[in-house]
Structures are given as C-alpha cells and as structure tokens.
Length: 342
Ligand code: G3H
Ligand code: 13P
Ligand code: ZN
Image (cartoon, rainbow, N blue to C red; front, side, top):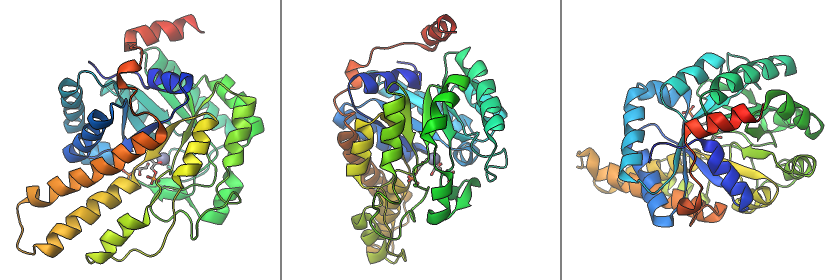
C-alpha cells in the first residue's frame, strides 16, 4: 500500500482511544527496526525525519527506503512525516519528496531558535496548510516552545525557562481555528534529547494538566507530545557499562504519556530512546569483541535493540493490534475531504 496521510491514523486513534508513536529515522536500520516492531505488534506506523535526517540521507535515500518499507509491508499503514519543518519551504520540499505529513513548527522563527510571534506562527502555518491540504497531506503545528535544542532547532530553553513558554490552553482553540491544522504539538515542560529532567518529574515540571485543559476545551483536537522519550535507566546503564559516560537523567514516564492519551494525545514523538538503545548495543559488541570490524556485527544487535524499544512503545501507547483496522484513505481522498470542509 502507498504511504498514507497521517491524519487517517490520528483519526482512527482518536476514535479508538489510543496514541501512535512517531519514531525518528536517519537510515535503513532504523526504518527496519520500526517495521519489525510494527509487524510483531500489528501496529500502524508514523516514521518521521528531521531536517538533519533529510540532509544526512540526501532525501532520496530516505524516500526509497520508505517506499521499500511500504512494499515489504503491504498490510501496515505507514505515514511519512517531516519533523520540525522550520519554514514553508522545508515543508513544501517534503511534500514534493513524497512525505504524507508535515510539521510546520512556527513556534520558532526560521532560524529554529528564536521564539516566534503569534502572527508569524499563524501566517506560516496557514501557508503550509493551504499547500499541503490541496495535496491531501496532513499538517501538524506547534503552539508554545519546547525546551532544549536539536538539529539546530530549539530555543535552547532550560527546564526552568521552558515553564515560561508552555502552550496557553486559552489560546489553543483560536490557533487551531485560524490555521485549520490537523494536529497540535503542545509545550508542557518537555524537551528534546536525553537530559529532560534532573529528577523524576512531578506535575510541577511535567504539566499534564495543560493537556487535560486543552482537551476539555477542544475534545476533537489531536494533540502531539514532543520530547516524549522515557530515557529508561536500563538503557543508560548499558551505555555506561560499556564505556559510555552519561550522567543520571530522567525522561517522560510512560504512565504520564498514557494519561495524555486519555486526554487527546494522539501522536507521541520518540527519538532519544531509540538512539540510546542503538548506542548501547553497538558499545556492547565493540567492547566485548574488540576485534570486530564487520558493521553487520554491531548493526544487527543495534537494529534489534531499537525494535524492542519501539515494540514496547507501540504496546504501551495502545496502537498495537490496530494496523488492519484503520480505514484507508488516499491522498486524493483526503484532498477531497479538505476541499469539502472549507
Ligand atoms: O526533533 C527531534 C529529533 O530528536 C530529531 O533530532 O534533528 O538531531 O535529527 P535531529
Ligand atoms: P525525544 O528526544 O524525547 O525522543 O523527542 C523526540 C522528538 O520530539 C522529535 O520531534
Ligand atoms: Zn520534537
């Protein structure tokens, strides 16, 4: 089956009270790991690529790997999503490259660092929605800013500063109405990367109440949680056991994500946990077998380690068992749907 519009996965998740993990990829092994996990758990799939990933893979490698994934897994609906598009041009090029969903992250200016004004965010998001919906492609937008930084994208806010840039539930309805985005990324105190919280997060720093309030005001809004890696201690321990040096750190507990899913979270972004799994597995092989030099000797365990993390997330988020249940709609059908709804 061809790559599907992300919107149909989010709609099915909302109708059936579950969330869908969106996993970042840069190469073949990561795409394979996600597909192994999806097959094992019968899950619909969102694969996402950052600007950095697109440049690392020269775009075209990624495109053909995604086509391979869908050809090899004809019964699994797969959406291909641009993560953190920094400008309409980035999103347009993604659509032209065959992505079936894009994120216009207008919460930051085009430099990907400076928190943007409301007017700028609305303007660029509207521009992308117009272009993408005319082609049946889904659009995710963001209101409020996350902490941290990745891919040169991120205001670099500390855990404390991020609290001043949370999504304001009183503004969210207006933003979604003005932009007509399909999904809204919300800032609730998380950040990208491994160092989110210095201790196990409480409701004071991980503001799940913001999600509950947005859901109360807008029960039909599909929310997206970024920075949602759980940073399991077991994965950090493996890295450190085999020569790594990662300090103690805490991520987003799975139980909080599950609470979010009860309140309208439909897409959960996970990259760091998979990076940790891959790095730990590679370190382990190279440390136990210092003579190893065939990349397959460490890439196979790395792929397996990532697939285990992804499968566990698919089960925890509730998407497992749903691959065959999603009602298919093509980009053409979504195009007509958007046309009819304006
Ligand atoms: O956006 C968050 C992901 O972790 C992507 O990271 O920009 O380093 O590829 P990246
Ligand atoms: P993590 O760094 O927590 O995995 O977040 C990834 C993300 O939000 C990608 O957009
Ligand atoms: Zn993100």
